[in-house]
Image 1 (cartoon, helix red, strand yellow):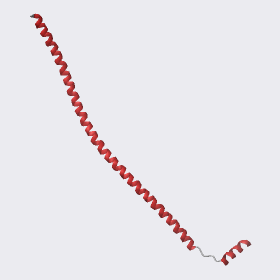
Image 2 (tube, one colour; image 1 turned 45 degrees about the horizontal axis):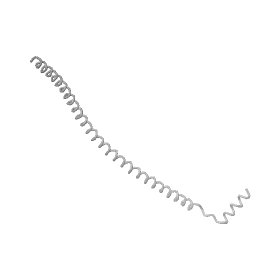
Image 3 (cartoon, one colour; image 1 turned 90 degrees about the vertical axis):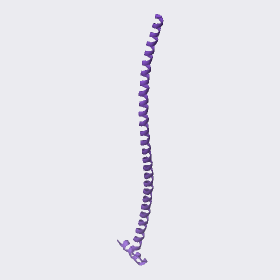
Length: 115
């Protein structure tokens, strides 16, 4: 009878020890679940922020490409305008030069020989 009581007492002590370990593990599980929830919330926020940043960068890429294309067109137009201007200046210069006659050219040539 006494051995039975001692055996039961030992089993109850082991049970208490086991219950204590279970409480510790349950507390750890609760702590980890809270941490998982916090990290899940943080991950969701980071994903939303990242999505907004990616959209913004995509819009910037589009703006940069459009600006570069417009700039290239401006450069091309500027070069064309410059070429036309140079041509017109050349044509205007030729039109303003006096037309030399062959007699005038001969006089100029003789004057240079005598110099």
